[in-house]
Length: 287
Image 1 (tube, rainbow, N blue to C red):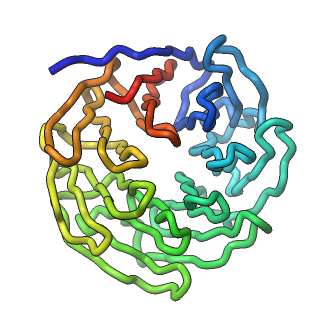
Image 2 (cartoon, rainbow, N blue to C red; image 1 turned 135 degrees about the vertical axis):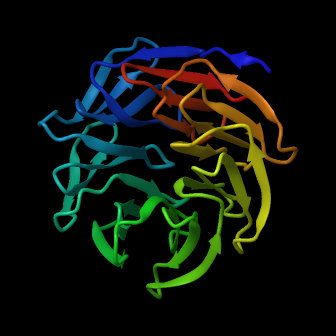
C-alpha cells in the first residue's frame, strides 16, 4: 500500500480544530484557538481574519459552495457568518448557551446545521434564523451532517445507532443500528451514500434509506471521517496515518502522510483532502 505525500504543507500558528479549502483551492479557512482566519495556501501566510483569538476555541468553519461566505461556530455560543473576501460580519446568532462543535451546509449553501453533544439546530442562512431544533435526553450525539437537501440531519451516537432527523417535521425519520459507538458521519453530495465510523473498527456505508450496503475495513477507532462529493472515496483518521478507501471495491487505495491527525476533510470539488495535525495542515491530491 502506498503512502501518499502531501502536495502542500501549511504551518499553523495555533492548534486547529478544523479547516476547509475555498472552492478555488487557494485559501484554507481554519478554526481553532487562533480564532477563524484564512491562510493563503501558496505562501502559507495569513490572508485575513474573520474572528480574533479571544481565549475561546473556534470549533469549525465552512465555506459556502459559491465561495461567498464563511460560516463558523465557536466557544462563545454563537453561529457567525462573514463575507469571504471582505471578512465583513453578516450576522452573529446565539446558540442559547450551547457550544456547537460542528457546522455543515446544504448543497446550495442556503441552510446550515450546527451540532453539539445533545442538540441539533437548523439555520436559514438568508436571515440567520434557527428554524428547527432536535434535543436528545442525554448527551449521546457524536457526529452530525446536514443532508444536501437542507431539510434532514444525518447523525450518529454513542449507542451505535445512526439516524435521520426530519427538520421540517421535527421528528425522527429513520434509525439503524451500526457497529460500536459512532464518532463521525458524512454524506455524498447527491445524498445517496452515507458513511459512519467510530469504535467499530470499520467505516459503514449506508444508502439513503439507512440500509447497510458495505463496510470498509482497515482502520482502528475513527475520530474524523469525510466522503468525496461523488461518493467514490472515503478518508478516515484514527490514531495512525489517515486511510483512503475506494467505496465501490472496499479496498484501501492509499495512506496519507502524517500521523496524529485530528481532522480530515475533502475539498468541495473532491480533488483534494485536507488533514489537520497540531501545528500543520497537509493538502493531498485525492488518490
